[in-house]
Image (tube, rainbow, N blue to C red; front, side, top):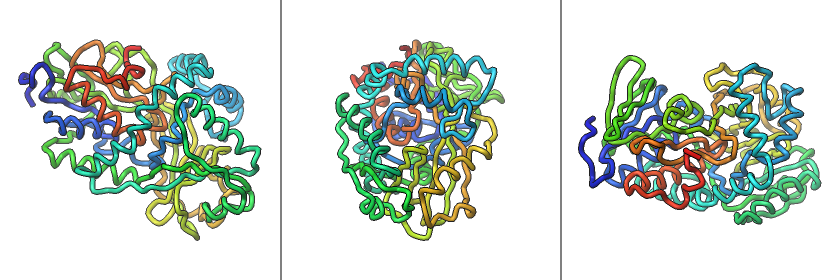
Length: 419
């Protein structure tokens, strides 16, 4: 793959490192603009956080993690290994440096800034999926409200306060308060313990692994090759970018996009990207159910997300700050089940399949890293936290615009990787 020809002053060829929803969306929108694209990923398509997540395209619930209450909750969770937010005792100085920066950003001013920054991604998220669906993956998204269910109306006030704060920051979320009867209607699996709810309207969901694999096939059908190797280094001479594998294989192009999720710092730090990205690992599994649910269910008090999936229910939860390549911790899975079991009836927990753990890339200030680095031909796209699936196509669309025009879209200014 040569890297010498250009359209005007902008790249004619791009290598995208990372075959998740962010990387493949970027590749697809670059192809829309006439750019030759190839993709590299050590595990192939959808090998990271893009496969096992809850599948929510939920701009109404894309709430930044750096809320002040999360800091208080996180400090308490240090003594509770079963807590949904888990910070393991470790001597890792990188983790504690990240947590210190995260704590410094757990204030309302920083949270509100992240909300305002994410507004363009939220506003474009569903439209970007529709554009992909018109001429891309033959996998449809499903329009459905997300029902947040609680034990008491008082507990529901926490989410309602968050929605009011989102509105104050500019993001209006259509929602309806539900009583116990309405919760039972919207969530046929709800136990008698769930007595209140909030219906979040205007949302969608998708089978994430199926969608991302279909997007990968669409990108390849347009001429891209997906290379399965681990990138050891990215080099640049300011005219082209060179991607080097651990075994010495080299690919070159006019530009490279680093979209490696929780592994982003390993390649991006040398290009002036100072903001730390850590793996907030999530777990999921699939269970058969006695009664189908019409749409996604959110259990905020235990931080568990449930989505209709292949005739059953995908259950996802926990935020575990651990190395992205560390093995799964069975206790984290058991903690999800223990917290959700009293709230849902008709779920056959012991028949679970598709057990998965994946690292979500979390930034300390609640804003992803999208755009150019200090070297003109190296770009990054990552750090979306729990909302990579929702924001991935919109990210790819905006970044493709920046790469091919040389102009930073206004929507990407708050995501500058060099901040």
